[in-house]
Length: 331
Image 1 (cartoon, rainbow, N blue to C red):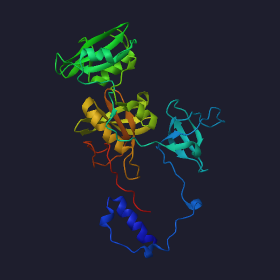
Image 2: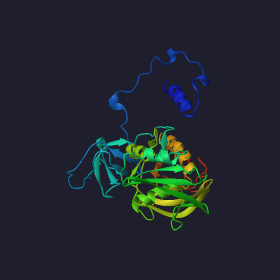
Image 3: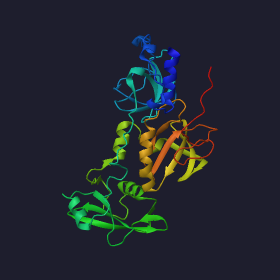
Image 4: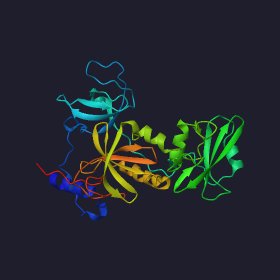
């Protein structure tokens, strides 16, 4: 009976619908009973798995890892006592021990059409409408809109003092610029720059005025544990070529990774939906998504698996990120 049950489970995993399965009398399964709860296998985190902490450990004992609730860690190895792991903290970079009970799996990101990498982009609105959106006045409050006078260009609208200042964003040789001295790959790159350095504009960008109904992808990714830190990423040689650019080998917190940088903001937004789907896929034969970084567009960071070439989302090349890895041989 157990073999028949596992066959049904295997078919379901492979994508068969219930209508494809033969009708089986319930009496055939009458003798089957689920295993007692104590006999079920506990969740085991493989090395390289990224988890979130469920609680706080502000006073760690010698050898233990200090962490706060909601911190990200990478599992390095399981201890002989299976209720403990050695892990690396993403924020501090420190390594240490923590209890399995303090860990939880990252939440899957929901596929939501309102989720936006550019919640501050308001599309086709007039200058007067932009002024109304940026009320009451607040230094550094901003939005980006399409230019009505110059189709194809954009306008960065910034609240400063009692005024709203409008900066035309020009297209120059495939890049965007305000002063023709500093150029950007896309709008996300431009906004990221001016949040750190006011440069040619009146003040640093401090607070985005979100378009009504839009949800910030950055906030949702961070909340679910999928937003990685750029400072921990090191990029190396190119290992593949995809439809939207090169795939690079890299390292994230000591782990070998494959990285895709999508610079076109429209394409990056489309890949956000695919990323949401990938957060739901967890299987030993699937190459894992480690997370994303919002910098110069969108960095998609996946574990690196060599000698595979099945591709998802236009990623190609041996050693590049893939969706399917060859199954491990049976023992």
